[in-house]
Length: 81
Length: 81
Image (cartoon, rainbow over all chains, first blue to last red; front, top):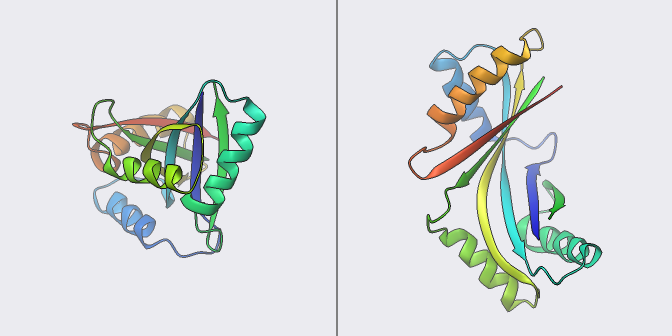
């Protein structure tokens, strides 16, 4: 079983890294890019013996406590087989 | 229109950051975590006038040339409305 965790900055939080990428895109000629936001992505391999509800609860807590800073970041958890 | 780009290390490429997170998970008592891999995640807001095929082609090229290092990383592009 695999858990995917996406961590993104909350709306309104300044993202200088995203701004730099946006600027680079414009400089080298990519048209039509209106904004870029950078986030983090985690793939967490889980013990296959775990049931999905338990896995989700554990990974939600892990994402909240360890993988993200809940003051400025949001996270989303996806469980795939 | 929004493009989501996921950049992950290729299988076999060592991921020290992921290893550190895995170790932290074990230390603070998360059971059942078998492995952690860290990647990057980008949300790219696009000009709504663009058509989807053109947008995908442009973002695929941008992901290959700018957002990832194709020697050690894979990328995946998703276009959402």
